[in-house]
Image (tube, rainbow, N blue to C red; front, side, top):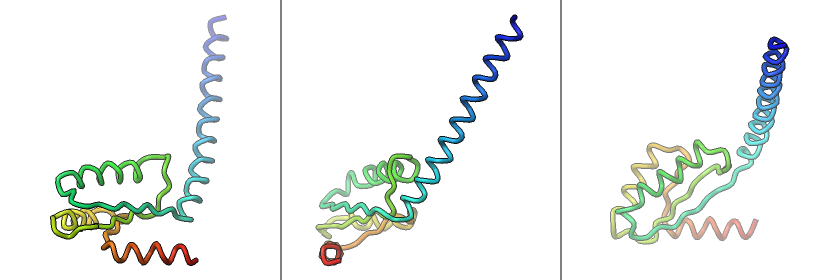
Length: 117
């Protein structure tokens, strides 16, 4: 009787593991399909040299290692070039491929082109 119960538990766990593997394969296939289409995140910053690095690292960590987001590129537009925010972002851009730092004028051009297409 105890062998039967142990066998039932083992088979139940094996079937559960198989279902989880199949579910993960389906999710990974659909996630990579969405990621290739591309969603872009635009962040505008102004005078945030004290907080920008922590904020951007937390956003990038969630995007790179999280399952819920499928963002292709993160575009950061600096609204004011009087502080060191842009320099911090340029250093981070060297570390992360999905991070792009641009001026506000360039961001405005991109937005206008999106509306036209």
